[in-house]
Image (cartoon, protein in one colour):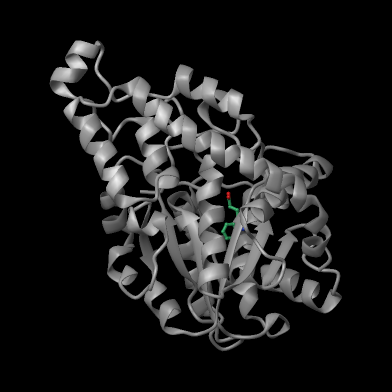
Length: 368
Ligand code: TRP
């Protein structure tokens, strides 16, 4: 059971439905009706599941909390989380708590605090700002440095320490499998990440939603359990969560920071991106043009189609036509790639300008 989803494993998820059933995750489609304008990622089923998001929707003021490990280039897989955060902040007025999990990253693989901080700013923060994150209504912080306000900072670390008293070793083992001191530390900090927006020092009890990849669900389940165990001390509300699917890597497998040919980074030049797509983007097309014309391609496994579908072709009619034409064989793989490249080139050019302009905003996020 624990092997199925593991925050520190690299397992691909094959059957989302099975996982939803096994772990009691509700389909997102059930709550989507309540959103006036659901985000593209929600409409298209990339955000596929939730826990308790209905109560978040019912509340006027809610916070969004999530985190990221600064472990390399910021790529299209990371972008889908950023897009959701910005949607909640901008369209739904959520206050954003965004954590750089530098302590977790230090303990897991990249034991260089200075480098982690640089990556967090150069790769993550700059791209987030360029995508539209606003400093107002945003607490951007590091696990190693919660706040310059000692009252706030103490409250966050105190909660991490206290949370350790609300869980047993057997429980942790059942959730995470093999443990190490670094993992336990990271888990307790993440529980505090998720629950601390409800502390008096951070504005008190409120609904909080945590958008994450499905691999983070073990942390969500634990945080919800621990929230209940603090009922007398803090009376926390159970944190809600939404879950998104992994975005396919270029070659069809996982998008992994350690393999530059598995992703498109938001700092890749349009020229580089184009080359990567032509050379590596896994195709759902047939071996020969004749066969393709006759039998058609498979958009469900075609990486170029998937990128258009999840991020770069928001027009429902256009994407349906592309899907139909590709499935029928009218549209060839090379042509499909060309459609993506045009969209992506435009996006990268504009984004990279915005990213440079974002430098002057960085201080407003760090001065907390
Ligand atoms: N563990 C998360 C990851 O691997 C990062 C993270 C830290 C996080 N704190 C969080 C995610 C709080 C969601 C909520 O990416």
